[in-house]
Length: 575
Image (cartoon, rainbow, N blue to C red; front, side, top):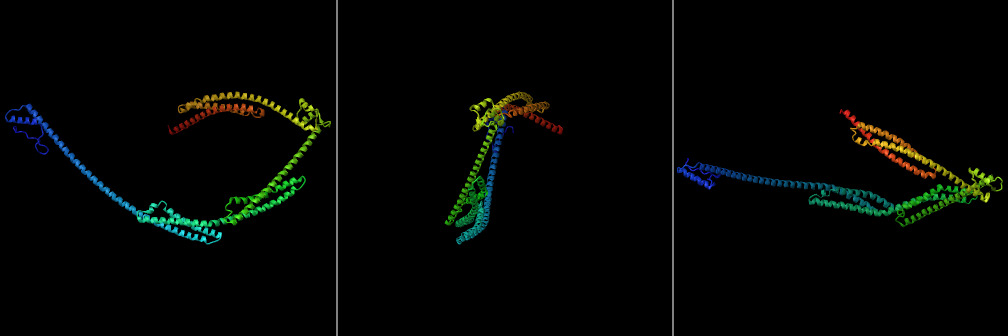
């Protein structure tokens, strides 16, 4: 009804809300009172009151939405907490399940490891039993070493033992090779498998120790016997070698007797007989010396072994060694005497030959003197000396040299040797003068030839400069060969032509340089070599410049060929 008071808005709980403005409530009461009293309210007041009511209603709706959102947020948080609690519980359950599975797996692994350890231990036990059996057999064989008394028996027993010991060692080695890298697998995880593994290891080490002990025992026992047998064998071999050496030495001694007979001969044939007798020593002497060397080499290579362990063997080896060295010393003395006798005989024969040659030459010179001593007065006069020089030395003796020879008068037969010496000196002076003249003439020709070659090299250098000028334009063209093919081709052709021409000129000049110092006298050789060395250096410089230009030209030619191949390939591909 129009006069009734408006109902209060209710909160979310359904009760009347107590919120709102106090002033607004009062105004509303006043308006209600005015309406009941019959007064007409002011429209503006009504409008304000309506706006106030709308505002209060909006606030109530907003508060309701906020409260609803808070409830929804609390509900979601509660659901999130429950979800997380469920996830944590699931993770805990899964972790416990995983631990249970891991524990079961570990138990299975330990069980399998124990089973594998037992299998490996069974295999190892079989190997150890075989090894222990082999060790027992080796110990039984080693016990036999104490029975025999002779060295041969001891060595035979030791050899039989070595076979058994080798089998035992191989069996023990098989055990340790089986255990190599399997110690952890052999131990297992239980106390029983670990105890069994320790027991097997102890047995294997005991077997190896037993083998080593019996091997050491037998070898210590057999070593003196083996040393004795080896010493006897070496001494027997040395005795056989000494017998052969003695036979060869007896042959040498017989030849020594023949040499003594030849040395006691007289006359011109004695030295030839001595040389012949010494030549007879060559092969027998070498054979005897080689036989003695074999004896001493055997001694030197087996110094300790040949003496043996017993005093009897040591005394015998000392005796044999003395015989061998005494035989070697006697042979060395005989052969040295033979060498000295042969050398003395050769020297006597050569001395006699020189004496005969001197006498023959003296007779020849005396005949020459008599030939040119026309008046047979025993003195060569000036004319006779000139005739001698002309006839025997083929040159004319100058007057001043003749006067020097005749300053003491004519040359008697007694001073004919001095005349020959003087003529030889004069002839050497003439030869030296001739060589000097030839050298001066050759030097003039050399300088003339060098000047001509220098002029030719100037022309060659001009040709090299032309070739370098042609080549100078090639490097930039090579970089742009694709765009300058025609220009590069023309430049390359021109450069190659210029280089070929320069090479021809340079080859001719080089040949002249190398033929410049041929057939030059020794006096002019040093100067000729200096001139030739300077020309050769210039030729080498020109040749290096020309080679550089030729290399650039070759690069350009290769570039042209490459571009031509590229063009052919592109044309074949249809581009």
